[in-house]
Image (cartoon, rainbow, N blue to C red; front, top):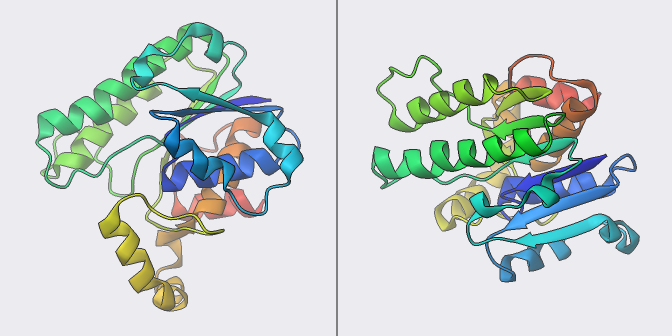
Length: 232
């Protein structure tokens, strides 16, 4: 199986890449990053045997919408983990990064490899009515709706809540990184109170691979279903 990961050097993307490298059914992992320096984080993933890095193909693209058809040919699954926080952004700017960029890549991919299963990292609380008061949820909802209409083999929207980074992976956003450090001691408590709202980078990666192999159980999956898919 050939997979491609966009946003491969972010917290979620690194977790997904790690699970892909460890999976014996994955023959090639194409990781897309905007600059060479950030790819060092991929090479530094923990507990991945050196021989598994032979699967890795690194693709540096300052503008990911310039990706060539050759890189996408024969792709079985696309894990789209690229995204930004909406904090401090106008709706126009957030839409350009979240909706426009994602759909530009998806349009290229569906022409090059229509047999692809496209998995998009959205978020808990996404608004697919596209009419709510929350800007980020509305834009994410527009993105989900558009992706689900595209003629991929299958498409699935992942809506995790709180994601706990494992295996030395860290968030690239300083505020989030500080929050994860502060909240880690309380994770067992949160897990007991709201187990269906929590997941991990490892579970997200394993669940994505399961969906890629077997198809999505539903158009959208949230943390509870992500965890179930990962365990199975």
